[in-house]
Length: 121
Image (tube, rainbow, N blue to C red; front, side, top):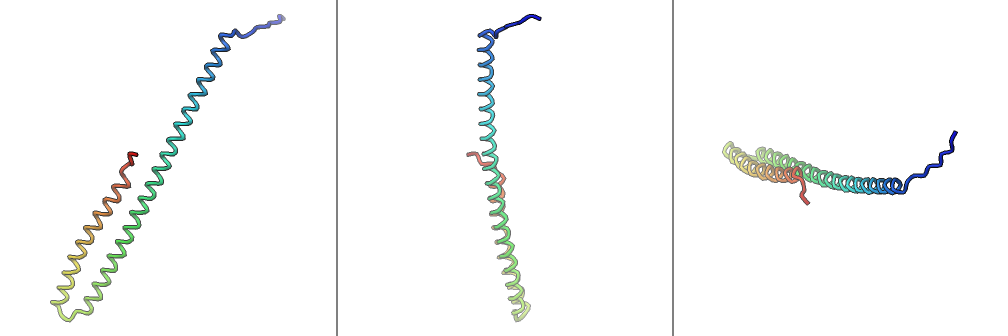
């Protein structure tokens, strides 16, 4: 057996060191980009959750208002003295509910649109 005492040439060692350094920098850049993307995704998810909560809260509020209006209608109809008054009460209720539902739909539509539209900040 021969005793081989081979040294790594300085050029090869320098090349290997630069390669490791470049790989480390590339990896650090990748990790930084991944962390930034994760933070942006988390922020978007938090914003979406807040938006969904707002839409849900508005929908429940509108449902409560509409049910209350229906009970008020029933109470007023029971108190009506004649068919003419019943028709007047019903007509007033329908006009008010159509206006209310149109406004509610507009507000909910805008709220859903804002939740579904990506934030460009």
